[in-house]
Length: 468
Image (cartoon, rainbow, N blue to C red; front, top):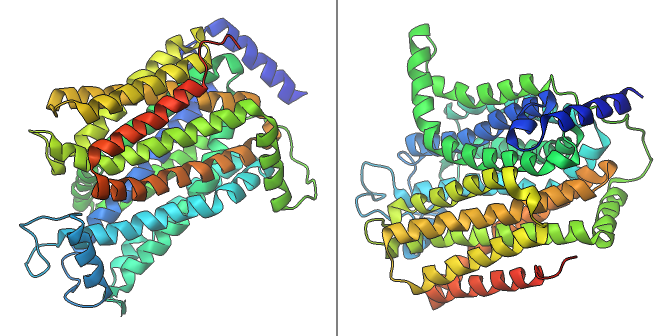
């Protein structure tokens, strides 16, 4: 009865507060969850920045790649033009750009593999355990694991030309990502427990905006903030203060999430196996057309975003005044457009049918891809089109995520979000390989037009002209 009473009180509060971002942020439980998300997301990005920093400072300058498997892999990267820099070479005093790319790719692989292997399993356990406990435990354990990073710089044996510390970083990254697979579905499943259906759209808009903002801010400010921590802690006799940033961010998130009250019902063991629970999740997707369609939207969307990430360097090379080294500007504009779209959906999205929003978003993205393929490359035009691509991403992704939360029973949310995590990460991985390969064989323009054709097909499948 306490849970029902709390839910009724929350409904009353939300009815009085109206709609939009202001109403969502007025909810104490969601506000705490949002603050925890900010620090968790920043910690994820800071961790990748720290790994690249350590590789450049320690392994890229001391590792010999004149022979052996590392030399063969670096030569392959050079042939593909990845990380090439005429001013840097393996025989010079500075770090080799191909070697940094190669070693960082190992970190990315260790970070991505658990998402593909464990997403569904982690989602099942996120359903079996209290959501707050899963979020607190996963962040707490990530805090402890990342405290071990400095010890990877200690001298020790080598394997395949790399010291034991690099292989230790791969293990730490793998374990950190494994814990993330538990955190992600629990976090998504907690949102409907704290926010009722009328406010789910603005809540997901804020969630998406925060994720994108954390990606931009985390990658942009990670290294300067690490250097700042190093300077601030040095007078206290603490050297290498940059190692404190990631566990500090995870630790703050852990403390904040301790105070979240989800009011979810008490769990009782059903005696079913994990595989049976995964089968239940798949069965629900086969029965629930709205959730299945929303999931397909997300898979299509993330596949397109991954392809654009792979194509961004080739696209930047075509634009005068940009160049390959500034390809991040294109991705930043996509992120800015997504953030603007998220704010618009939070305030106005409830006025439109979801199929109309998705059709407009997909149609706009397809139109931008055609223009990028056909128009003469121009800096400001290209940046503007990338911004519109991000806006279309928000129109498709946020309503789709909201539909999944609205139409999925509470007892199945972890399973469904675990499956979503699996599918999204596969959707992110495959296009990264395929898009680059296609560009190398047929060129950038045909690939952009092919993507536009697929997106237009998705827009047509929405049938926005129908009322139901």
